Image 1 (cartoon, rainbow, N blue to C red):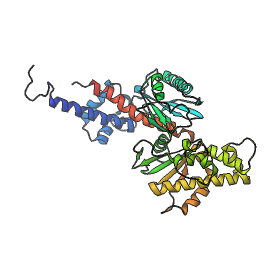
Image 2 (image 1 turned 90 degrees about the vertical axis):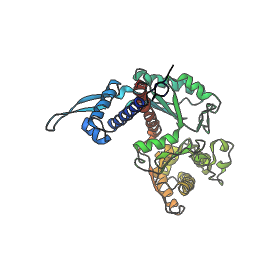
Image 3 (image 1 turned 135 degrees about the vertical axis):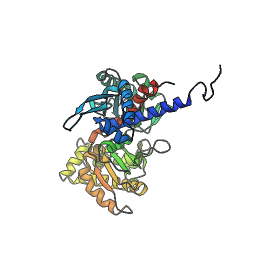
Image 4 (image 1 turned 180 degrees about the vertical axis):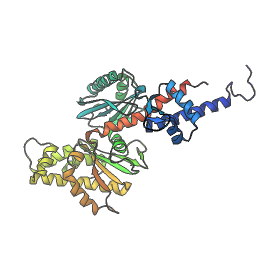
Length: 407
């Protein structure tokens, strides 16, 4: 078999270059429609810098691929009414899950980012088998609402996902998930490939996309609840570290003088988490003399009401949190610290004043802003959706456009 001069392996370099440019133009138009839509051809030409004929060609290809659709004309202007375009939302679907010890929070979104279904259920986290079954059933329910057309799934879990051994490290609140192969069993149960991200890292991304972190280059999200963790945004990007364990502040050596710091489970949970998480608050209140059925919520409610024992327990908590944040500020110099989680969010009104005051004397240039997340319990699932949507939009485009281009 001979090869024509100017060809490489039977392929025409000029045709390949033209095809690549066409895909690049279509991707640029698609992204602008997603960001600006409904949008007209002249507006797309102005936003992308592409010529009107190029815009028209790209729109024709995108419509044929089922990625965009026309949605009527803009009225109210003199002259010919402009035809408007938007992305076709149902071209792809994403499921986001926040998998915790107490709750599984899940949502289904289309490519526009609009939430179609929400489902929050008590977690069956007592064992890996039961929780895998529960996650599978939740995904099945959400997938049915999308006629089974799920593009991808993102799960937020405590700890760090060991992809090679298919297990979670540093996730003591999910018993059994540290065993090799457990996430492989989950993969067998779910209908499409999925990604596992640290839940607090996803909460930081949720805060970046939907909350107080929007537009900021450097901030941290600190969750204080059943566990303790931190998501780090540096230069506008999530910082994971060399092994994906950046932000595992549960293991900061804080509170050495606290009896809880030397409890049998400290190595598994980390010293800071042992003294400052919700179980730590409960144990501290018990040690100080609070009686009856104690929860972290009860301790904070009692402190608000002026109970002296509860106030002392909360003072211990404020001290632990302040020392941890002082280390974070000294190392990362964030613009903002966002507090979330059961204590960081719901108990922050009791903690914030003391933490802010103490940090004034413990940080080199004064403390950054410290605020409570407006996203509440939805931060992780919103971060999962934001991450999944970025992947899904690229996948849907590549399958519809790149795969359809001639070689």
